[in-house]
Each structure stands twice: as C-alpha cells, then as structure tokens.
Image (cartoon, rainbow over all chains, first blue to last red; front, top):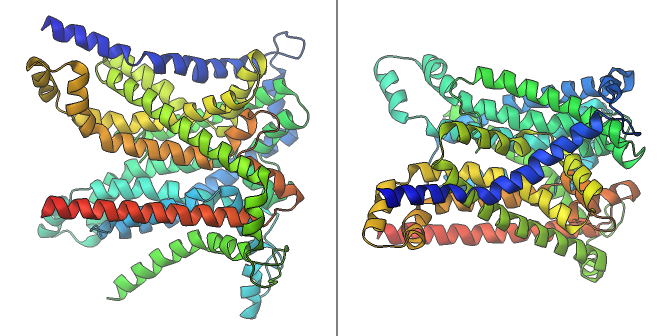
Length: 279
Length: 260
C-alpha cells in the first residue's frame, strides 16, 4: 500500500513539465497582454487602451465581427445539423471514410481555399458565369459582408459537423427503438431523444465556429478587400502597421472578455458539462 | 425511397461545396495562363518551377519541421500531463483543465499576440517562439484526447502487473500504453492538422524573413499569387489522399485478421 501511494505521488510529478510550460506560455503571455493593455507608452497605468473601444471605428468593427460570427455560426448550424443526422443514421464500415471526407478539406491551406472562393464569387467569376448562363442577373458579392460571411461559413463548417456527428453517433440506438415500440412517432423521437442528446455536440460546434470567426482577419482581408474592417483586422493593424502595442493589447483584452462572456453563457446552457469535449 | 434520395443529394451537395474550391485550385495548377480568369492551355510549367524555387522549398521544409516537432513535443507533454492529472484531486484537476482550455478557446489573434509580446520583450522572435506557440496550441488537444482513454483504463490490471514484479515503466508500456494509444494517435493528428493549417499564430510569432507555407501565401495575396502555390497545394492534397488510402488499407487488413 505504501509503495503504491509513493508511486501515485510520483505520477503526479509527470504533470510537472506541462505545468511549467503552461505557466510560461499560457499564463505569462496573458499577463503580458494585460500589462501592455493597462499601461501607456511611458509605462504609467491607464485605462485608455480599454476605453478606446468606444471609438466609432473600433466598436463598429467589433459589432460587425459579432454580427458576422453570429451569422456564420447560425448558417453552419443549419447546414450541419441535418447533415450530421443523416450521416449518423448510416453507421457502417464506411464511418471512418465519411469522417475523413469532411476533415480532408482542412488539410489544404485555408488561405488558398479562400482564394479559390474569391475566384468563385468575383464579379466575372464562376458563380456569376453560372447565373448568367441561366439568364439570371449577376450578383455583386466579392468585397461585401456577404462574401466574408460565406468564406467563414465555408472555412469553419467541418468544425460544426464533426462534434454534432460524434454526439449523434453516441446516442444509444436502443433508446430510439424502445420509443418507437412504445408508439412514439418520428417527430416525438426527434424532439424527446435525438435533439436533447445531441445538444453537447451542438454546443461544442457553436463554440468551435463562433470563437475563431469573431477574431478572424485573413478571410476578411481577402474576401472583404480591406474595405470592411473586423476587430481582428483592427488589432492586427495596431501591431503590423501603427506599431501601437499598448492599444492593440487593450483591444485584445476587450475581445477576450467578449469571448469569455459568450463562453460562460454557452456553458450555462450546457447542463451536461460535456461542452468541452470537442471531437 | 424519395427520402433516401433527398438525403443522398443533401450530403452530396455539402461535399460539393466543400470540395469545389479545392477542385478549382487543382485546375489552376495546370493553367498555362498566369491569370486566374483565363484558361491558357494545359501545362506542367508551375510544377517544374516549384521544385526550382528555393524560397518555396524552404517554406515547405520550415512548415513540415515546425509542425512535426510541435506535434511530437505536444504529445509527450500532453500524455505525461494526462497521467499525472488523472491521479490528482478534483480541485487541482479543475484548475489545470481550465488553464489547458485557454489556448483552445481564446481567439487565435490574442494567443499569437500574447506569445509575441513575451518573446518580443524578453527574448527575440525566431524559430523557437514559433515552435513554442505551436506546441502551446497543440497540447490541449492531446490532453483532451488522452484523458478519456486513461479514465477508461483499468487501474487494477496495472497494479497487478506491479505486484507481479513489473517495474512501473515496464507495466506502463505493456499495459497502459496500448490502451491509450488511439487517444495519443488522434491527439497527434489533431495537433498536427491545427498546426499545419495555422496562419494567425505563426504570422505573429515568426521571426523576420522566416516563412511557413501559410505566411508565404498571405504575403503573395497582395501582389498576386504565383500559380506555383496551386501546384504545391495539389501535390500536398494528393500526398494526403495517398496516406489516407494506405492507412485505410492497413486498418481494413487488421480488421480482417482479427476476424479471421
């Protein structure tokens, strides 16, 4: 027994390297951002960098980011949920291949995929070519908010599909059979069994899509043609163009607060506490 | 019957949307015209030029080195940490898991900037800052994949092995490791994928004059992208398909062997 206890204690030490790493590269960097965000260039304490979010350019960018992130999250949920449902019904030997088909696009660099989207959406692009072929009028899409919305939905869709699919595969088929035997119709089964049991997957999907799309700046750059500024672009420019690390850090803190608030709201709805399991 | 047809059509439609841009990239890689709008005939020119371009080859090498090293280190750190975390008390577990979730849930821009500030202030930006950022990004995925497998592993088998005189390390390799291997593998795969596809964090933490595939493409976006990049992505896509096909064949054979 004593030997065992001794060994258990030793096992905890295995966490040591990771703990050092987490302090050095997760906590310390965050403290750096907070330090820069709360000081001015002469080193004195200031709230100015946080309050800078009140500047119209900044809060408009944040509002637009929230709107686009919300939109792309909703659209991907609407596309992904029925898809995951259909896929989970046909579980066979092909299960692995099906999952792979939806992960595979992520292995092609997303900047290149977004560039290809640019070719599809351009004024003389493929989509308008198809529309004109059928005698429909051309759509002006590229360099609009809609283009950014399409780009983000396209890029993050697999992150919505996979967690929902996983949650649905875990649903015990016997539950559904039992409900059907007891006379429940398809709609009732869906409402009482499939919907509630797939909720953890939906919540991780929402987090996986919403968080990256709220701060994304490269997609907005390519499809928005730098006409439309999102909060990610504003922060990026503070570091790459104006070199104002303090303001950039201050805005980063604001963005972080927004993300953690939305996370807290999501987790409150997630009674099961499984929201953290992503795949 | 109609319902099944609609379902198949829907799955096909989503797959079409996901793969259409990739198909366009592949077509562009064979386009003799440099313009993305005009078809100038079929050519292998970009593939030939690709292998003569030192800068591109250097970027590919940096990307693959960085991603592989980051994923391997993340697996080592994450697996060891998972073993320790499972024997800890609940309170400590919660604290560690909260910290672990930060890089995964925080915005990439913020994570990238935070690490850049740290290195920019106290050291300098270069290969190591980029590597540190990628490892930090990967470890949470390893822990989240290995932990559930560890919790399913039976402790008593392991303890029985110790009682029968196995050294802890030997017992670990023979008993625990095979059980958690699938988790380690999927953790590695995720860390690798995320690191390879990452642009934002690399963009902030890389040293001057350094490029991965992602940052190189981003630089070219403004000046007009060179079709060599399409050729590169086509080659990578085919390589990945090949690896998947081989992996699929191997696992199919394994299933047959265990059945037969």
